[in-house]
Length: 338
Image 1 (cartoon, rainbow, N blue to C red):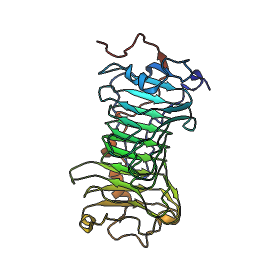
Image 2: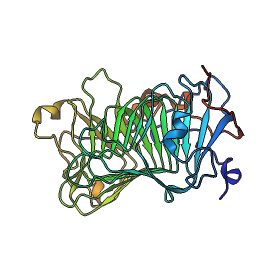
Image 3: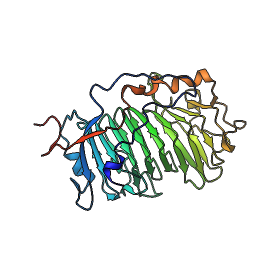
Image 4: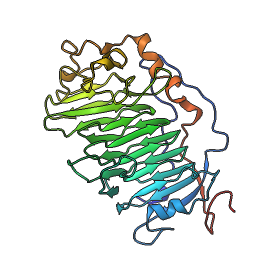
């Protein structure tokens, strides 16, 4: 499908998070979101660049325009970083199944990611981001260390620490996230809506390791209308990386991959008094709370509300629609210029 065919597809303009009656803010992004500069990445040489990193590097430091990098189908074997001084970039494929960014690296969680996002106001669409390091240790597929980042229809795949949801406010919509141990970890304030979480753990698996260190930090992970699958009985919903770890599952389908106890304390019983692990109207065989640990919570509607409204990520103050007008601006670099 050619670029002209798909540019009018739009992001969800609002978060459909009415399960707990929370409303979202509606502040506008301080410039037009209908216009963007187009860069095309095509391995065949028919675009502006043949690698994604070169396209990102073409964006000027302190960029103040929307940059839409259209990535043609292919397997891109490269390690990608979006530097902090390159905000307002969108990386977009057309189908996550045929637009794949892959690398093989392990060890340090900040050095090993296949894709690292440090720039604010970042968007990724319809991409597979994977780290093929395997089962022998930490191998991050995606690191998000930036404020106001959104991911739509992406596949994020590794084994341990798949998604380092490090810091900032983030939104994940209709994404597939696969791993085994702590495969969504970090200390961001993030909402996952309509996402599919798949555990590949054969015996012991952990979905989340949230790293909130203080009751004053407004961070945590909220999963709304999601789905959890995997092998039977070997995976818990989370364990506390930080002593005030906070994770909420709302109206989420839990298959029997979720163990009856639901949560573990990472061999530190003192954290049972400070973590905030809640479930709201979840369903499926793994959602049975009769054998859940006593320090997790079955939330009421009112208790759920603060975690799905603007107090978590700021709502529509930064989520934006897909641009509908595109222009080329050459020669590079793009942006304010030097």
